[in-house]
Image (cartoon, rainbow, N blue to C red):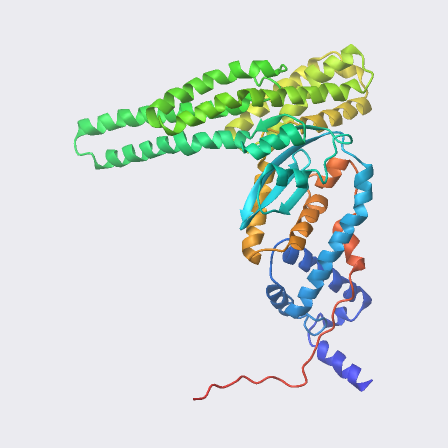
Length: 478
């Protein structure tokens, strides 16, 4: 008894110490410790030594074991429970098959390549595995573990122009291959955009060092021409981005696949003129690549419209309702989503204007007031779901690769188990602004909260250890 009384007196040396002796305090300590291990240790890549120092700063070392080795053991157990969580949810995922998917694929390199396949609309990661190579056979081995043609329909796949990925889309997933718009636009920036920037910087430098007034005027006229060309270059890139949509941005009418090339041609002609001036060698290959990829980009519009019509074919609709959905509701929802997603100010303004025009047409449609609020919301949810399926880039994969790169460098690498745990966390715990996770968006099911599921299944916190002998610093002697 005296020993326990002495231990309690030693622990209760701070004003808040009494709380940790209560049942509520012990429960809150579990929440604090496991929350820090989960969010900072596993998700953030913070080491156990740093976490141990953090808990010591909070003056918890007299109440729980906060050594680096003890925290490392808890982290290992937490990862094992996360894998058990996925196994517990797998049965639900098997029952809730998605209506259709659009996939983005890419690889990142940390010594060996990591093959990443993501459902672009929901952000759900299907595959994230370290492999020795990135051939078609390796890709298909990973993809075939979750893809079944009879149970799930892949409408299209977005990736770069790697031959293995193109074959994966056409032969493996049996769907159209869509070139990544981000990579195509970035190719112009690396060649032509960089050359124009170098030319502007050179003229600015010459203008500052010019001695005579006539030389300054000549350089000023050249600089004005370069600024005009740069503005044409930026507007052409924005025009290419604005053209690749299922609706015309000016009229709001539906755009079919065969209409894409005439809309792209004026912007490509401007870029071709500028490439002859600033980057005649580097930009020509980019322009040729764009011209080759136009049929594949048109295939994205065709595949998406097929998806829309396939979704409507499952419901018995009157022609008036069908026309209202395709011509009035869907354009407004689509441009509203694009406005929220886009960060570039000029594009955001154009999309917002298109959304406002589409909303005006929707309210002016005589069929809109005939629907009840419940029916309107039902069709709005349908339009939101389908509008999210139009994906032009594999930026979700690029973002995932960036996250893995940060963790890889902070942890100096990670094991196969750690990579699997990170995939599960992304699918079932990473939330958007609306609070939904990728798994919820893909399977349309409310899954149990991952952290709250694991927390009660973790063992009790370790008790603090106190050495009988205080170590003395060693002195160096000759």
